[in-house]
Image (cartoon, rainbow, N blue to C red):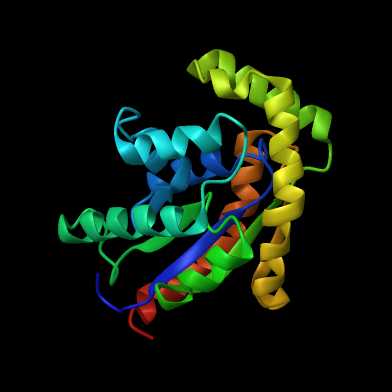
Length: 206
C-alpha cells in the first residue's frame, strides 16, 4: 500500500452506540467511503487459520490482537484502493471499529491523517444492552445476544478502547449524543463531517 496517509474521520464509541449505523449511512453519500472493521472480520472464512484466530478472541468478547487487526485492515484497504472502490483523492475515509487500542492508534499513524473523531456518547449501558440484543435478533448475530458477552465488551472498551481518545487533539474530537433516533444522530454527525468533507474537496492532497 502507498505510504500516502488517508484523510479520515473516526466513528468512536462504546458497543451499541451506533457507529455501524451511522457509518453505513455516510458510506452511501458520494464523497464518503465507509469501512467497518467488524465487517472485515465477519467476512472471514472461519475455517481458515486467520478465521480461527479471530473466532478464538471474539467468542470470548475480547479484542483481536493489534498486529492481526492492523494487517487485516491494511490488506483490505489495499484491495479497496487497487479496485478503485476507494479513491483517496476524492473520498473521505470513514472508519468505525478501528483503532480499538492505543497501540492500534499509534500503528495507524503512518496510514491515517485523522481530521475528525466523532465520539458517539451513550452513557446508559442498559440501553446499549437493549440495542445490541435487538440488533442480534434482527441480524441473527448470536454473539451479541449473550448479555455476559456484551458486558464483557463494555469492560474491554473501558480498559482498552476508551483511552484511544487521548491519542488525538481535543480540538478534533466532537461529542455527539447517541441516544436519539438514527436520523437525529445523523443530523448532528453531518453537522460535523460536512465541513471536513468540503475542506477535503478543496484541498485533497493537503
